[in-house]
Image 1: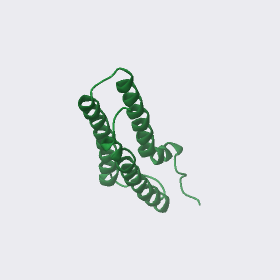
Image 2: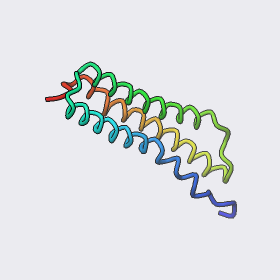
Image 3: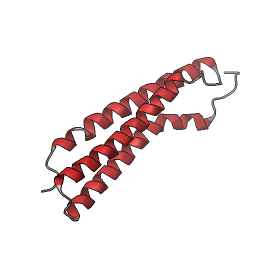
Image 4: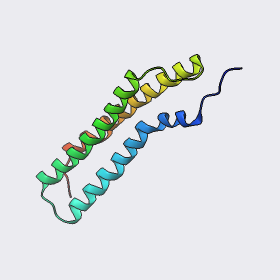
Length: 112
């Protein structure tokens, strides 16, 4: 290829969605453990877990919208288009994984 290479900093977009998923995992489990350890009642604990989950879903959804409506990235046309498509689908997968992984947990017994 004789064109300009793709800047490595643009590859970070591939990890953004699942990085937020990882943050959601850590924060939700930590909040759950703290709530159970300190004997929080079920209602406020479940509400705080739902709010934290919603914040992470909004963050991933906002990034998805931002990347989907952004102009074409500068760089070689085929690589730039491919990377944009892969980033958008990675964000969609992270959003779906967040809903599937953490959504049902809100319906379970909070502390045993």
